[in-house]
Structure formats: C-alpha cells, structure tokens
Image 1 (cartoon, rainbow, N blue to C red):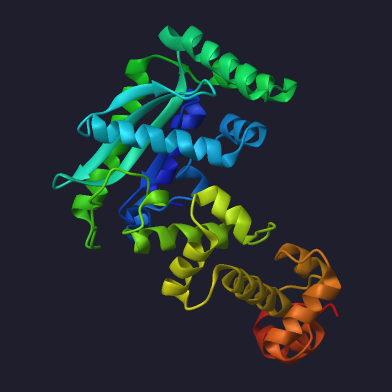
Image 2 (image 1 turned 135 degrees about the vertical axis):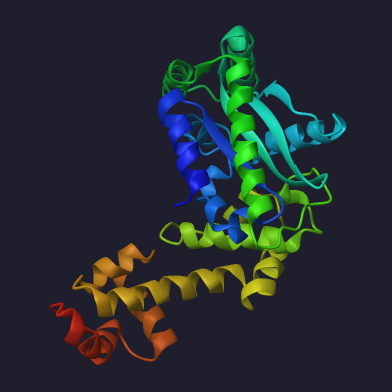
Length: 309
C-alpha cells in the first residue's frame, strides 16, 4: 500500500511489535508514501481488538486520550507507559517545524515491566469483570510474540518517526501541523482532518453494519457532529454517504463481474437481497438486473465477461 505500511508490517512480522500512527495533520491522506489503512492508525492488532470487544471501544479510546494528554504535560517528550489491558506503549511525537504532525505508538510487552503489565491487566479484570478465557489466551499469545525491551520499542518508534519526517520534508503536498497534542477524535477545531478519518473509515468498512451510534461510540463524537464533519467534505450525511458508496460499488460489480445479484448485494453490505434491489432502484431508477442488462453490454465488448441475470 505504501512505504510506511510496508515498514509497519515488517516490524510486526519480525518482532511482534504493533506500531500505529495517530495522524493529527492529514499526512496519511495527502502523502502517498505514508498512506495507511484505518486499523494501523489505531491500536488495531489482534490482542487490542480482542481487548476492545471484552471491554469497550470507548474505554480504549479514553486510554489513548489519556496518553496524549500526558504527552502534552511532558512538553512533547516521548515516554513509555502501560495501558490497563497490559500493553506497553512507547509514545513518540513527530514534529515538523516544532508543530505536531503525528504521534507514533509502538506496542509490546516490555520484559522488565512484564509483571507490572500483567498486574495492571488483572486489576482491571477484577474491577471491570471483563474476564474471558479467550482474552487471556490472546494476551498470553501477545506476550510471547511481542516480548521486547524498552530500548527496542524506543528504536521502532524512532524508526517510524524518521520515516514519516523524511517523507513529510520531501513531499510536495502541503502538510498542516496540528496546534494541539489532543487526539484528533476530540479536537473540534481540526475538522478537516477528522472528516478525512471518518470518510476513510466508512470507505474501508462499508461492507459491515454501520450506524451513527456505532460511529459516535468509536470516535467519541456526537452523532450530529459526525454528520456535520462528513457533510462538509462530501455534501451529505454519514449514512447517506455509506449508502451511496455501497451502491456505486454494486453498480461497478454489476457491469464488470458475473456474480449473481444477491451475492453482489452481500458484498457491498446488503445481506437482504430484496432490500438491496429496492435501494438500488430508488437510487438508479432501475433494478440491478435492468442496470446490468443496459450497461454491461458496452463494457463486455472489450471484457468478454459472461452475464449472470
């Protein structure tokens, strides 16, 4: 996908360390070599995903917010901490011209702090009653895979930081540094960057069930604020944009593939084929079958793809 993404995957494959980049300036959208999928901008590793299911997405986002407030109080100096789910994070700010453009989180289990990390997890389990055998198995697996020293976490965070800085300095794209260390999810003044994050999330997850309530819980924003941010960029609310995006994907599959219509509906997030057909007709003025018949003929002159009605 990009040079940065390749680096992050290599670090995780070789050392078990998950590095995520918290973008507060839009660099992962404006600089191609820094483009990242949404899950690599959050703590989206296997264990963290299991932890979010066991507790809540909102609780984990709150932990991230606390870490970034601490970064601000530290005067922007990097630090190492342990979240309540037993993950050790080395937090490294990335500054361009003394302005913050991103924050790097290198996550693992530090050998010299392993006991402290496990005690913190157990204390949270007792307090929050979120114990499950599957969660503990995921944590044990995470400990085995990401067993590192603090110096190693620091090294990976610095390596990713330098990669981002080099790309930002060499890029012809305009990078607008953030004025604040607070997380993008909570900064109301940084609407353009947050809108980009929201739209990227919608485009990457359109196949899944999405509601405004789910978006509000994930991004710590009100439903009305989410709609305003998305509308500012695409001139429609979040759910209307998801619907349009799904149907555009469907229209492309109808003319470029031989998939049955009900399968295309499932592919784009409509498990109910009748509802998919109604939504498609309401948007395009014809059923999926009629659309395929009308528009695939010209396309298939060159593609020679068989049509399935």
